[in-house]
Image (cartoon, rainbow, N blue to C red; front, side, top):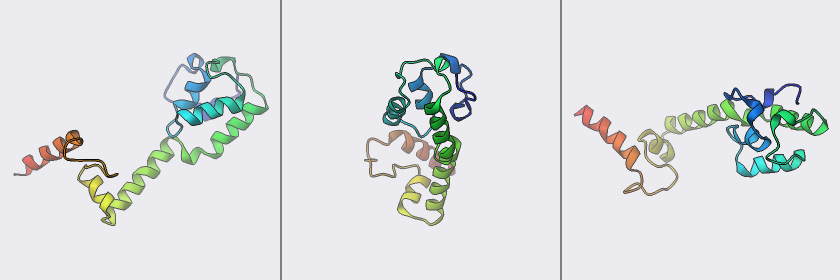
Length: 129
């Protein structure tokens, strides 16, 4: 088993039940393809249980990878994204105004597909009147 699961910590209490793929995939900022690449790099099968992983050179490199890229994962990544959105809102950019009005900001159709966000924003408008 790894000396310390710090790079892999999450709200999950049962790390011993997870397999290697799930361990990587549960992190915010790591998707399907990166999880598969990390499994291939580690040399373990994606369905291999985390509790059976032994400390070796590869796991040390993976731990260093997660610690060095901590700014791009989990809470730090969420904070960076929210800071970017607030900056866009402050400078009154087009995307910032779309975020502020709770409309799709990346060119999606909003006449029919953005019904959930439009419903919430219309609800606020009705309260103002």
